[in-house]
Image (cartoon, rainbow over all chains, first blue to last red; front, top):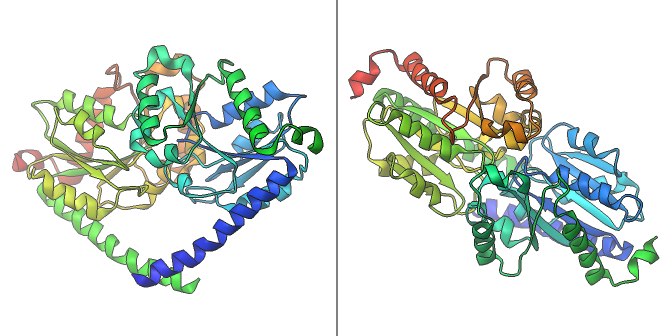
Length: 227
Length: 227
């Protein structure tokens, strides 16, 4: 038993330092790194697609997209932004080494935003620091409003929650008030956005949030410096 | 590196034997154990609720319901069937020891079916044998038809796929044919059921499948023997 714990500690110390180094390196470049977590099928890829279309010609974003298998998400996103597919080959979350390799292959030095679309999983990714500046958890209205209470760590470690697929609200039993109340019990300062990426509803508030977060962290002049 | 692998092997051997022992013990009792896997919010609890209502007074089922935190699912199911909540306290899947403890606390010797509602996660639970006779994976239409290809192990290790929330098909981009084709590339003999537990659509086929599976494994006389 002691042996296992010792091995885990030794292995964990390196990623923690490495994640901090990656975060600082990306900050120096003026690139805000956003780690996007959710269940499978909550709409991470659709949100990134809608964000890219909204920002076309105005803000520069790139995506590292994680999956167990296939490069389908990268194929979906490739027409709209620089994207690298990260395939974990079975692992239930992305790890920093894969993110660093993806970033190097992306070859985009001047991004304002680097989104990391994590493996669809509301559990494992919440325990892994990928060197992000901002963690965002998504919850689709179709998943039910009880998920913040049932999967607390993903919500506790996130700065914002995106409630997605609001166009389906008339057809599903989902109380936004209940989901928000449960989530804020876990994380009182959680910012909440409700949107439908498919129908373009609520996208302006989401976009403003991201731009504000970048300015708060890097200051108002970073965008022009990195351009 | 070698040390870690050695530890994992030593730890894994015991659960494998234990799972087989649990499976055989439950077979002797005439109880078919069904391990239900899916993403968070695909509708596992709703399907079990609808199954219990359909079977009320005719077939005896019990449920062990797994979650990271809270006993909300057990509260939902308790009016309809014997149920025990298993709370993993952070772990991304159920393990056999917790299932065995839950079964002992359930104190139902004469069940025809024991359902294990796993933690909502399409990745980790697929690697853990809980001593079940039948593994079933659920996929909600709202999650997208690309999930079998992106999360292959859950589909490869399951005997059946339940496509849930078919009442939402008019509002979401989901091709049942595409989901089935991808899933059968991974598991050619996969049985597929499409249903809406909320609206009671497709429940008869699902029920017949379960009863048939139990009879195939335990023979036609088991039901009356265990009664």
